Length: 304
Ligand code: MG
Image 1 (cartoon, rainbow, N blue to C red):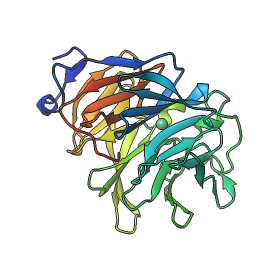
Image 2: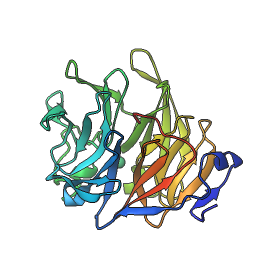
Image 3: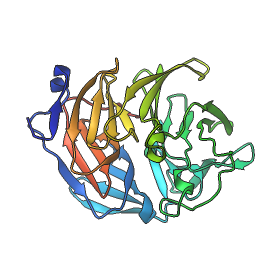
Image 4: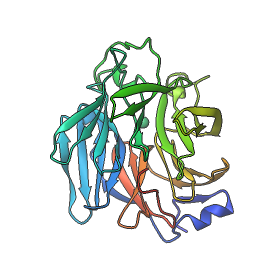
């Protein structure tokens, strides 16, 4: 077993590849986030937020700039058509990059009021786009543009329907909603709250779970896991429904019943992650100034 693995529950042994080690695939960033994988080109994209750019790593080729002046992008994902969907702190919007490279704005206001700074995003199989809207990107000029909330400092989870343009509040039960992901069968939506970042005494640092009804309403909100040390930023599910979440000491893996199974320990603090590689069995971790990768014995869902 590589020394980057910490076994807490024996089930974790079946998920990790004991002979795999952490490999750093990129460095020289300021704050990495929003990793997303394109299997068709064996390419990883991620945001380097303070440097206002999206970087690209191609296996066997290396790192290059995918998009300069990215609007201080943060979370990225793909829709079912394979198109890149991006949260932009600086432009306070969520966009879709079309296959010809043009950018379509999916959401930039709620009832005429500008969004705060969309942070992370996931697309459901019905095409709806779900994203979190905390204030991190308008609190300073470091990860966006310092500015005022037009939503009375409320930080919502939104659901956008690109077919109609409708934008709906999916949940208002968060201090700082951050990462989000569906269970493999989409019956559960997990959403993290990283409110402890600005309230060390009382702020939440947990992932909540909600049941997803057929009309896309969320019910039965409950705390799925409290993350220590640090806080949950981004996270992803594997095909067995385990949740792999960022934490201060690396990546923590939780079983669907909320049991902490084990950790992948990293030299830098992880903000977000995604499964990739041709077999979806390689975990890519955006971690502060770097991006790390490690092979696992479980695969990630195709559209996390
Ligand atoms: Mg985030």
